[in-house]
Image (cartoon, one colour):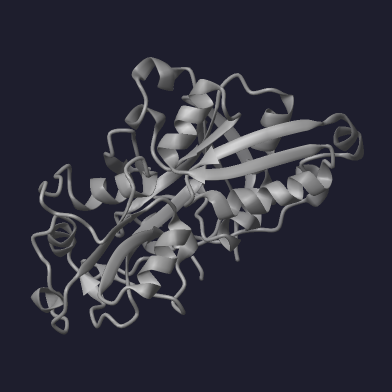
Length: 315
């Protein structure tokens, strides 16, 4: 799996307020630099003694590997803190933080896309990084590249056999994410352009997490689905090009690969330990190397940007 180097800084949006982050290591679209562990560690000895409590963090599974890796290091540095991480999808994470069931809601869509305007406005958007997403197929499928129109036809049930898109004849088995998934919302916005599949079209499965999509795609001959780059593994399935463009971080950054999203960690009236963990996610320690290692892209490395309506413009 994959998703150095010059020092830069980038602005990460947090509830509409720009937060300057200096010394960010940029990866995937430009390079990175080593960070000063004495200055960007999440906690000093005195802070480690003072921080305690539990932070519940639910939501997008596309984002989960990075948050889990960061949470482990944060807990090591703050032994009286527990970061409880669960999945459920972006919609679940946003609902949980809105309702006070979680201190952090992970989402790969803007809160405005899932919540009422007033509820979304009450949340603080901590934009941690960017994730690319792309179509994947069972390893035995002999297709390597699909156009956006072909993908649209497949995921609306208009194209049902691999022979229709240049492959060996065989039924196309569509594996979807469940409603509420931010990965699904991102993929459909980029590929379907607002269209929905007809009522009589049913995918072979609807999975509730990225991990179960990986399992299902391996087990199902002729299967197609989509995943975040952070889950790409060419020993388990095959990632496809889209419109001749390879699904990788460089092409997301330069705007030629169109399926991507910001990874948000939403909070509401964050307490001390929650804010400390958010600050750690935005620190050089995480942004300088861990983001790339886990298959993500620093937000400041993007040459394009996207708003809540899905409109992509130059950064």
